Structures are given as C-alpha cells and as structure tokens.
Image (cartoon, rainbow, N blue to C red; front, side):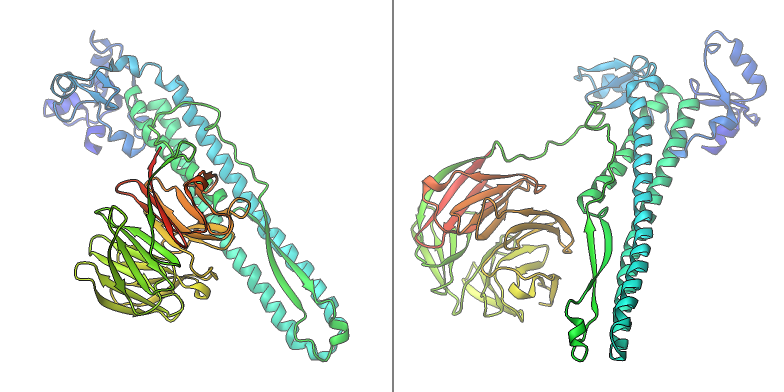
Length: 560
C-alpha cells in the first residue's frame, strides 16, 4: 500500500520509479508531475478529481486499504447488489448475482453520498455520542467532588460528636474515620475507572470524527460509502456502551452520609460505635440525547426482539402425578416426563401417555432435578441434606454423590458446571471436573425455589423479584414480581430468553420479557393450575410443563 501511494502508477507500469504528487481516486493510483499534466488533458481522465498525495495519505489506513476494483476479477465495480449488500464488477453479476433482482448502477448508488442523509446521520450521531460521553464524564467528576465535600462535612460532624464524649471513644473514632475513607476510596476507584473508560470512548469518537472529516474531504464516493458501514458499527458500539451504563446503574450518584447514634450520650460507658458511614445512590440526572428513536435511517438489518404479547399456550395433556409434594419436573428428549417428590424421596418417570414408566428411589430427599442430554445424566438435589446426586439414566444407577456443605435446591447445568440454590449460602456453582464448590452470589434465597440458565445467563428467584445475571454472577437486570405473583417457586426460560415463573401462593404463571421490563400473567387458571411448584420448558419441542405441588401437571404447546 505504501509503494502504491508514493510511486507514480503510470511510471511504475513503465518500470520507472518516480514519486507521485497527486492521487486520482477514479484511476486508483498516484501520478507524478508529468503524468499529472497528461492526465489533466486526456479525454478519458480530464474530468477525474485529483488530490495532493499528502492530503490523501491523511485518510485512515483501513480506508486506504479499500480497493475500488473487484479482487477476484480485477475489474472496476459497476453494480451494487442490494440483496447481498456488496459491490460487483461486470463478471460478478453474471457469475454470482444472476438471480438477484435489486441490482443498481453503483454510480447512482454513490451519487452525492457525502451529502446524503445517511452520511449526515453518522456525523450527527458521532457528535451526539461525543456530547453524551462528555456529559457523563463531567457528571462522574462532579460526583467525585461531591464525595469529597461529603467527606469534609462528615469529618466535621464526627469531630463535633467526638467532643461530647470522653477519651473512651478514641479508638471508635479512628475506626469510623477509616471506614469513611475506605468508603470514599472504594467509590472513587469505581468512578475513576468508569471515567477512564469514558475518556477512552471519547478518544475513539474524536478519532472517528477526524477520520470522517478526512473521508468527507479526500475519499472517493465509493470509499466513503463502504467506510460508512465500519464507522456506523463503531458508533453503534459506543451507543451500546452508553445504554449499558444506564441499564447497569453505573451512573447512579453515590452519596456518603453520616448517621449518629441517638442514645450515645446516655451510653458513654457501654457505647461501642459512634455512628455509621452510609453509602447511598440516587438516579443520575444525566440525560442522553439520541436520534435513534427519532429517525428511521437503518443501514444494518436489526434482529427482532422476542415479545410476550403474542405468546400462546395450548393445553395438550393433563397428567396425574403420584407424588404429594412435587418440587421438580423435566421432559426427556423422547417426550417422557420426570417428577421429583420431596416427601416420598422418589423420582417418577412417566410415559408420554401419562402412565408410570418406572420409579427411582434415591434414599434421601429429592428436591430438584436437571437432565443433561449429552451425558444422559439426571442431576438430583437433596435440599437440607446438602448433597447432589448424579444418576445414569441408561442403567438407572447412582454414579456420583457431591457434598456441597450447604442446603441444595434448584439446579441448572451449563458447560461442565452445576449452578444451584444454596439457600442461606446464596447462589453457588459446582465444577464437575473436581467437585469444587464456589459461591457465585452472596444472597439468601428461598428454599425449594428453582434456578435456570439460557445462553450465557443465569436466572434465580430472590423472594419478591426475578434476577438475571451472567455466569460470573454480575447483575444484568432485576424484575419486581410482588404486585402480580406471590410465592415464586419455579422458573424456566424458552429459546427466546422469555422467563416463566410460577406463583405458588397466587396460583398463576407469569412470563417476563427477555430484558426484564415487561410481564404478562398467562391465563391458565381454567386448566386447573393450583399451587404450581415446578416448571420446565422443552426448547427442542417448544413445550412447557407446569406441575402443581400435588395431584396434577399440565403440558402445553407454546407458540408465538
């Protein structure tokens, strides 16, 4: 590429090395001073636009690499195929695009591209993202300043409080001050880290703006048209970065405050704490400008988001379950149903017609189950017995017993790891390689509640809310369910990321949108849903199995 830019293309073809002084985008080659004169008067090239080679070299390297001729046939692009979103030469059209209907002359497609609405949109989007980044950075910097002011004010309060008590509280004051500084330092580090990320994004946007200006001035229309897609992708990534900041509550305004003990004056001899350093946050007042919701220039196809409004459940079968305390259920690939009965310590495998196929006796509590299709293993949890059992469904024998050190209820599998509800030990994970147990999320969960995985996401019930996190435990969204569902127990996820939750007390099943923002109560009461405990979605056959805690289970076909 460097020799192509620096050497005159005409002279190089004649085996003469002469430096180029101008660049012709139409010819896609550099020209020396002498060839420039011939180029300017030749009938075929006199209308070509040339630029100084020094100016042309200011274009980004990835733009300079864009070729204006077909690499396969070494012919100039003459057609643009809308179906395949690519330029074509004459031979490309006859060889690979003969059946394509939307073929346009490329000169018509790129005409006035630099003044087109699409180009203007990218310019304005870059300005918008840059402004948003600056606004967020300033907000975070203001937060650091306010944290310092909070700290100063609290120091004064602490010292004034300290004057009211005797020397017995010297050590308590030192502990409290350390807590204050640690709280401020912790938040400062988090905010500073975010500011660094924002500044990096600002530098990227500034670079994009510089590149766009250079492209506008010096690139050919075709180069501009092809480069716009790359730049728009960068812009889209930065917009996603901004939306993630808002969604993950990283822009919340952190406030340090001080709460003084009310009765300390009368408890000078017994008081062991002067006060509490409180970290609180309020919703950021930063608003992000966005043209995305105002205009409809779509250059990249968008994948439709799964909805819950058109979801339809059709009851296909009602099954009589043998157990009196059904806590888990599943569907095998051949359509058979599995139910775990907590009270009888049994697992019932039912045929597709609802009759009993066979019973597995585990010898202990059988809380929740999960079938791993690849290895034909059934994973069984034991509730307060603190263990996980692996059963080979081919020979129906127990293969492994994993001691977890805590109660084990809801269970799910993903890529060689078992995720489970550890009750007061939180959300935990077991590696099947060495049976090691790690706490993923430190939260107290309700006993007998399920968990689920889908893609790289993990779902669990935290009393009155449904929580979605990644497989490392990082929060992605949280949906409050108390207004429309009580006593949440079962949870499962379909192929589109829609989350189904059973309400044991409210006698209903609710579906939540993949982003956690919407919900819909499914009309299943007429089918006999009462105290639904367990749920399972068969992603291969689009079937939902709902099991009441006693007597009956219901199999639905799910469609959109």
